[in-house]
Length: 113
Image (cartoon, rainbow, N blue to C red; front, side, top):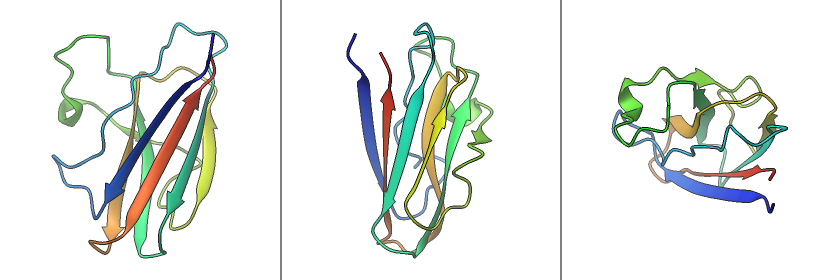
């Protein structure tokens, strides 16, 4: 089975309604493995990659109502960083918490298939 690629870009600071699109990885794939790479266009942003265990596959998932945890390897980052998930999580998103309105971060995730 081929790997699944997900990429999203956030410009400016995230707001309650302005987080990036959410990646919903396939938790049935074993072994579970997602590589994450984040690329910034300047050092004027602070960002974290976050995950949740709240998504159950329902189309009524509301990301603002979910509990989000920072990825231990990508928390308050200001430069290019990579990390991974080796245990299942049900949702992944990018949160830009500080910086200029022109600062851009691109998160790319690849789930092994």
